[in-house]
Image: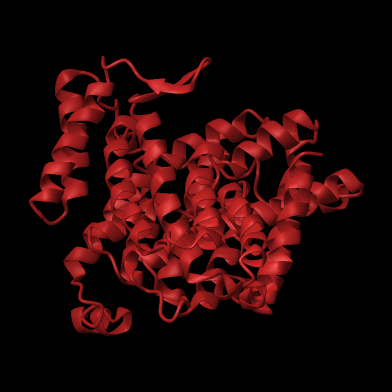
Length: 435
C-alpha cells in the first residue's frame, strides 16, 4: 500500500516522504480551517442559513482538495475564497439588493463558463503568457498579502483612521500571536522539521492553559443539513435576466479567474514546480478548481478557489497531491468535529501566515529590479496585493502597467499578445467593479 501511494504521487521523485506529506496536509488544513466558520458568518449576513453554508463549505472544499490532489497531483488546497464571499454578501446581496438565491445562481453560471474556458485551455494560455518576472512578483506579493493578514488577525496591526493602519495594543490575545511567531521563527531558523505546525500547536496549548482560548463543550457534533441551500442555484438561474445581473456574473468570473491564476502561479513558484516559466499540469489544476467552484455553487456557497494558505503546507515540505488529499479528508472530518476546531483561533494561525509570508517574499530577489520596465509593474503587484487586500487587484495593477512600461522601454514586441489583451480585460475589470 505504501509503495502504491509513493508511486502514484511520485513522492520519492519529489524528494518528500509520506509522513512529511501527511504533516503538510494537516498543516494546510489547520491554516485554513477558519473558513469553516468565517464563510457561514459572511454569507449569513446575506440571509443564508449558516448551518447549511458550514456544511457546503466543508464538502466543496473537500471536493476541490481531493480533485487537486488525485487528478492534478498538486499540494494545493481549495475552499470558498475570502474577498469574493464578501463581494457576494455586501456588494451584491446587500448593496444591490439581489436575493442570495439569485446571487448563487450567478455563481453557478460563472462557474460553468469557468469550466468551458478551462476545457478550451484559455486559462492555461493566459497563465503561460505571464512573464517570469511578474510570476516571481506574484509569488512574493502573495507572501506580503498573507503576512499582512496574519499581522492583522493576530492583533499586531490594526485599522487606524489617521494612518489607515497602525501598531496594535500588545495585550490580551495578541501575546499569543507574538509567542507563536517567536516559537515558529526560532524553530525555522534552527531548521526543525514541522516548525510551523509545532508553533501553531504550542500557541493553541498556551491559549488553553491561560484561558485565552476556551475549551469546547463537546468534541463531536452532527453536520448541519444542506437542505436550505442545496441546488437552490439551479432553481433560480432564470432570475439572471438583467444587465445588472449579467455584470454580477462577469464580476464573479473575472475576480475568481485572476485570483485563482495568481494564487496558483505564486504557490507553484514557492514549491519549485515552474519549468521554463510554465506550470506543469496547469490544465488539470485549473479543471479541478473549476469543478470545485461548480460543486460549491450547487451545494450553496460562494466561489471556490485555490487557497494561499496552501503555502503553509508547502513550507513544511508538502510537494505531492497527497498533501491536498489529506487536507480534503480533514475537511470532511471537520464537519463532525466542528467544536474542536474552535480552538484554532486567528491568533493560532496568524504566526504561520507571517512566517510563510517571509518564505514567499524571497522570490523578490529573482525580479530584475535594475530594469525599470520590469521593476515598476512588479512593484505594483507586490504593493498592490496587501494594500488593496486582494490578489486579483494587485495582479491587475501590474498587468496594466506592464505593456505600458515595455513600450516605453522600446520592448513592446517582446510582450506576448495575451498580455496586451489582459491589459484591456483588466481595465474592463476595474470599470465593472466601480459601476
